[in-house]
Image (cartoon, rainbow, N blue to C red; front, side, top):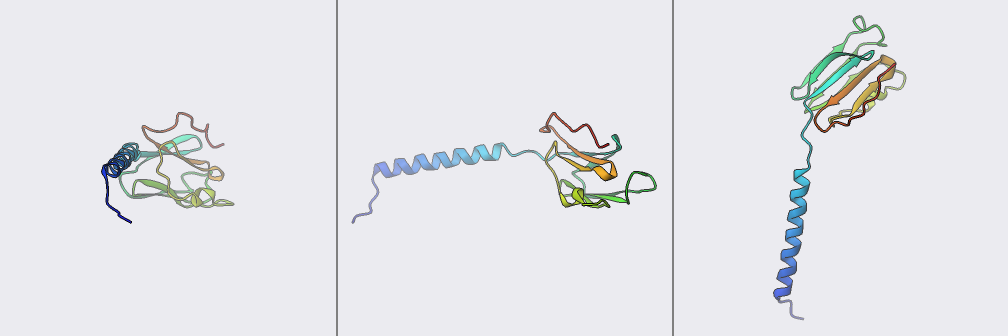
Length: 131
């Protein structure tokens, strides 16, 4: 069996390569830019804005925010935010882990805290708040 390539093979290779390159360019062009900030709401009031471009840890003290079940620690790392430590029956808001997508919310209902990641590609609808 002779495995020499003919002109048709080279045309097929070229077309496949062009399709792969086009898909790669399309994939790379639709990547989202990381969000730049996350707003922290307590009892439906904006209380703090986190800069997602800077790693930091912010603690909401129960003495300053009486609806908290205990101190609540929010951490920003690598352009993402999470609730690092909190007290609630099921710990859902800390189980979520790091979030970075614009329009995403971390809701700690028992603590009356909501963290909303802002950005250009954020969704228009946002929940009415934690009651």
